[in-house]
Image (tube, rainbow, N blue to C red; front, side, top):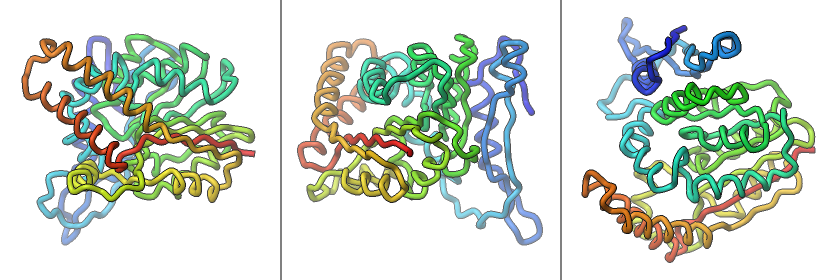
Amino acid sequence: MFGFTDGYLATEKVNGLTAALDVYRTVEGNKTVGFDFKSLKEVDASIHTSQNFLDLYWVLKKSEFLPEDGSESKTFRDFLDKTQYTDTGIFAYEWIFGDNFISPGGAAENLKILKQLGDLKSGQTMLDIGVGIGGGARQAAAEFGLHVLGIDLSSNMLSIALDRLQRDKDTRVRYSITDAMKCEYPPESFDYIFSRDGLHHNDNLGLLIKRLHKCLKPNGRILITVYGKGHGKFSKKFSEYVANRQYHLLNLEELIHIFEEAGFKNVKGVDLTQRFKDILMDELTKAKTHKSDFLKVSKYEGIVNGWMDKLGYIEDDNHCWLQVSADRD
């Protein structure tokens, strides 16, 4: 267990220590061993007795690994935090999407999607997968009184979320650094499961959705948005983009089938791609209008070029933004 006292920031300690534990490898005899990182969690007692949201513990398992091959990234968490979700990348996303959010449309769009879960009541529980820097979880708690567990594999993003939770001190919110495929929750734990634009990183979505079905309470509801694929032939540039991000994209029909196979009822799929295009256009205009806000020309050009590329992928019917909602009996 590793605790923090007032005056320290999770972004100064948590992401670095998590990364070190996650990628640690050594040789014992003729075996390469290290830690299989399971999760980082907050200590509930410290939250309730001293309002300390930064008293944390790591769950690790000593495991054998393949010999190191010189790869730059040793784990998928390591890959995420070294590529798409570096500190500078996260804050660039937040600048374009709005405070506390790194998904299309920011707070306003997230609230609109949250409301589609139905008649949300104070005290109900929600699992937020891919919570990022935590804005959606804190919004669900503040707007509806939900008790939210937000999980994400990126220690860079969750460290930011933890610092802001320590600042806001909302006891209805908890965060955990973990892989949704590894975390274990008792059956029928949550009234709602929610995920914004993170599950396209998963290479076995069918298995994950089956596991999530078990986590929902009877009459519980799940709603996700993900990046998906259209029906156009992938351009070379889009194929490279998908490979570089390690995305696993599905079309809307495939997503609906996965939910039905998992046992969900009232499965509804919606193609949000036109809305995605409109948001990209608005955000592109914002970036161009406020170009002077960027300290580095390269960061500005990276955002503008990235958004222009996405608009091109949409035009080619390669890149989609998809939503699926469903109920458990």
